[in-house]
Length: 355
Ligand code: FEH
Ligand code: ZN
Ligand code: ZN
Image (cartoon, rainbow, N blue to C red; front, top):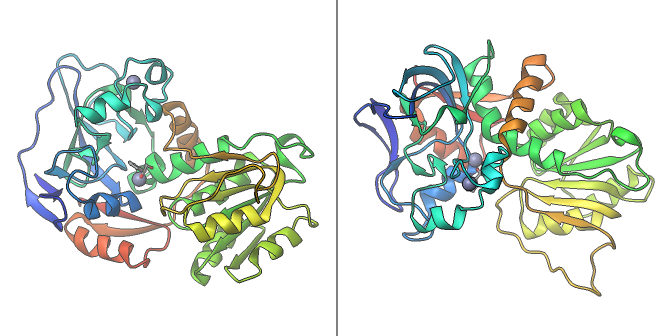
């Protein structure tokens, strides 16, 4: 089968042939129909040897949808041919967090990392930028019904991460039930941000304010239902505050995560508000008392999402409330797609199709 592989640390993505795996025990083999590209794939490709708790080589791709092709002898759950999306964070499956479906926060992650067994598909384990993906257990598969695989795949990472970040925004003092009268700033309207705009519109009544450096992204934000959008300017924080009557936004979802976007988010934030650092831009924020941060804010660093939340995101997509803006590529075009992602030239989410 074809696979897009990291053959050695610092090496380029290579489209090559590998043996098609055979599922054993509880394992399930999925025929991949779509696999999304993520900024984290770039971090994996750019990582120095030893920087990540993974052993190279492995196949990339942690945002996968397809059909069940073959079940291991002890596998239970989906039927052969059923269309599924793959829950990406593969924990131990037994600890308290995993038992609650929160494998993104597996209690044994340090132990698994020390064993270099990988975080999941495409993250130290062979992933879904390939014709087939071997999944350790059917617990990691969710049926998607008649949802197109190119819509389903991005939900497993971009959609789930955005949903988890929105779910983490607490009801704010002075905000009404469901968020009416509140405002949320979405910084970065890319693969995750454009879905966050739609999710906010679907599950809250908050005013959604979008910020990006690209006019095309602001246009996408409006298409996704943002009430307001602006490209970044020196006075963007003041412009956002102006949209809230001066109080500041109740929550900031930073899908970029640079020092500049964190500074912008803090300057726009209302006392008692939420700042969710989602993007892996490597930015820094000084947290100190006394200090410059608004009083009462809550800072979170959400990571991916839970299995039940993935079910909720799939339900939103199947209801028509969430639509992924996709830029499609053939699997064999992976190096070009990765180059386009690196250059910031992808509108929405890049999705590769084995075809
Ligand atoms: C995955 C693995 C490690 C860091 C970040 C990620 C995200 O892409 C998951 O959404
Ligand atoms: Zn990702
Ligand atoms: Zn666990």
